[in-house]
Structures are given as structure tokens and as C-alpha cells.
Image 1 (cartoon, rainbow over the protein chains, first blue to last red):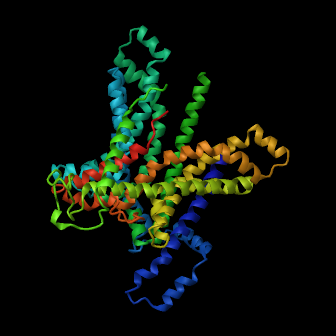
Image 2: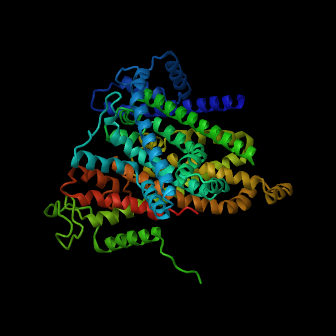
Image 3: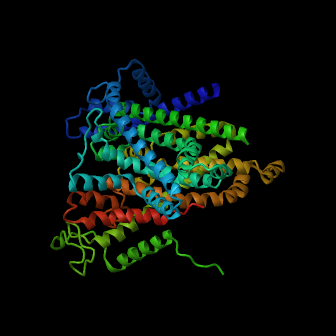
Length: 300
Length: 259
């Protein structure tokens, strides 16, 4: 526990230094945005004099985070800005994870239930093609089909707790989750189907449906959960491109905006947020995996 | 004698590269506008069998030259990434306890941040030049390769022949050059080949976002083609679908079957 805490705090310190220095370097480039805006020489000199003061920038960044005074370039409190983006982000991440993992789980078990290797081969190839396709391509294809052609879903935006708005972006993101879950779990369930435990259940007269959807599912799902947790971590950190394509007001869109608008405070805070969320969920997955391996070792 | 088997992946490779090379041979670079061919459908004119986009640029030419431009950027980017990862791993190796903890922590920071975010921030920081795309890809991708290389370095460092070399007076640089690098050869080769698909996707994404990835002036990038034609899907569907198929074909062709 102590080593984990030390590891986390050293990670946090380095991440915050990294985030603050990157963002402050970024803000120094800001001068050219005022090129035609009557920027005074005094302001330029003031900016140049701060070069090399990474440490003081870092302290100022930490101070503003602690006392809650940090603001976006538009004057909004960063904490309230991030808070307003959390619900859409979590809603989208949850939809994507549920869509991808439920579909991946069901289809991998269904192909085994039918004992159909061709069906399994077909879904494996589909999953490989999905993983070979950038996520923005899916987003555009979904937009073309379901908005331009069929006019079934809105092209973007979000209203609180309205799943209607997260279906298209969530499907675009969830397809990759599906592909990863399917490829991983199909291998596991087909291997498990040849285990002596499953053969014993078959000789005892258990229905094949019960064996596949209950016994095998319960054996493989803890391992699949590791992949799901890792994917959830990357989605909660912000899905920049999909959120940008669908005008989705989540953390990813904020990140993209902060880079484009050179909003140093917002960028630094969001970098910190993304890194910490991803780190925590990775460690959760790591401990979950260790726990499973430990359990397996005990069984052996 | 080994029996030749045409797998699904090899079949896709064959189809993709055939279309790619024929396009390179038949068409010039799609850099110029021909409004007389604007929105030309596929099979309407045999000079442009796959049609043209709304600026009259041939779709097949954009497919081939877009792929070529992507390949010409992704291979040096991958080499640079591995060189940078290897360099950081070497620094960590030279000052084992002092710097390796720092380089490990640094890589964990980069791994914790979405790679696209790191790439976009890098592009925003660096001077505005097409070559900076390579550096953005390096910074967004190096940590993963570094972790794999470090794992392999640790394994080699624990091996008997390295211990023997150190015991008879071999210096760190000597062990790195004559034991680690040959030992890392297969890992580097594996990282090079498996990393290319993700670089292709990153380049397509950059191009879609309007970042100029076309270092060799070979016409519009694949992502740029999608972005340019997506709102005119009803008029020129091939101009949207062909670059999409091209990205998938490229990534799939450079990918490897799970062994």
C-alpha cells in the first residue's frame, strides 16, 4: 500500500510538472494570436521574461488548482467547466462500454453455443477489420448512414440523460470495445469448451445452453473485465475526435478546444485529469489481474 | 517443400497492392484541379474509371498517391520512434538506478495520456512545419516501444553471458553494443512491424483534422479526402468510400495475424 501511494504521488508530481510546463510553453506562443490586435510591446516583453520560469509556473498552477481559482480563457471556473462535462462523458463512456462489451460477450458465447467455427471466424475477421479502421471513419460512416441518409439520429449535441444523443458517438466508440472483447473472449471460451470441467458437465447431462451461457461465461468474464476496465479508462479520459465530430460536450471536446484555443490553464488541468483517471483505472485493472492470477495459483 | 496458402490477409494484401501499383502507373499526382470532370461517377469515363471528386481529381490516383504518401511518412516515423525509445532505454541502462527510475516514470506519464492528445500538443508546441508530424508521432508513440524494449533489456541483463561479460570487465557501452543490441534485434523488428498500423491510423487522423502530413507533395492525404468529400456523399460516394477502404486496406495489409 505504501509503495503504491509513493508510486502514485511520484506519478502525480511528474504528470503535473509535465502538464503545467507543456501548457505554459503553449501559452507563450500566444503572442501571434494578437498580431493584428494591437498587442503592446510591454505585454510581449512581459511574456518573454517568463521563459525559463517553469518552476514558478508549476507552483502557480498547483496553487490555482488547490484554491480553485483557475479559470478558462473565457473566464469560467475550470472546476465547474470540467464538472459540467463529466455527465456527458460518463454517459457516453458507459453506453460505449455496455454496447461493446455486451455485444462482444454475447456473440462470442453465441458462436460457441452454435458450435459454429465459421461464425466465429467471421466475427474474428470483422473484429480485425474494426480494429484496422480509425475510429473517426466509423463516426463519419454512422453520420452518413443514420443522419444524412436515414435521418434517424441527431448529428450531434447532448441533453442530460438522453441516450438518444449518445447512440451514434457511443456506437462509433463501442465498436472498438466490441472488437477487442470479441477477439479476446472468443479465444478464451473456445479453449474453455475443451476443458475437462466442461466435459464433466456434459457427461452429467447439463444442457449445452446452461454450460455456455452460465458456466463458461462465469469462468471467462473476470478476465474480460480487465479489458473492459482499461477501455473504460481511456473513454472517461476523453474521446477527442468522436466528441469533436458529433459536437458532443464531453471532456474530449474540451481537450480539443483547449489545444486549438491555447487555453493553457484548461489544457494543463485536463491533461492532469486524463492522466490521473487513466492511471487509477489501469492500477485497478492491474490489481484485478493480480487477484485473478493469485486465485488461479491457489487453485493449481 | 512448403505449400503456398493464400490467407484472407494475403488475399487483401494482393488486392490492395495491385490497385495501388496500377494507380501509380496509370495516373499522375492528383495535385491539379480539373473542373470539367467534377463529380464524375465511377465507370462514366474510361479515363477515370473510379470517377473524380468535386474538384475533378481522379479517385484512383488519390487512392494510390494518398497511400504512397502515408507509407512514406509512416516508415520513417516508426524508425524514428524506435530510435528514440532505444535512446531513452540506453540512457536508463547506463545510469541504472539513477536515471532508469526517471525514464520509467516519464514513460508511465506518456502512457497515461491519450497518444492523440500528446501528438496534438506536440504539434501545437513545435514550429509550423510538415516534418514536425514525424516528431508528433514519435512523442505520442515512444512510451509503448520503450516499455517493451525495457522489458527485453531487463531479461537480457539477467542472462548469463551479460553477467560473464561484466565480470571480465566489459563496460556498459560495450555490453549494450555487443550484447543488448543483437539481443534486441528481433524485438525491434517486431515493434517496427506491429507499430506501423497504428502510425497509419494516426496519419489518417492528422490528415482528417487538417494537419498537413503530405511531406512529399503527393496530393491530398487519405483523411483529408474523407473530410473533403463527406458532406457530398450523395454526389460522389466513391470519393468518400475509396479513401476509407484505402485506410482499412493499408492498416490490414501492414497488420499481422496473431501467432
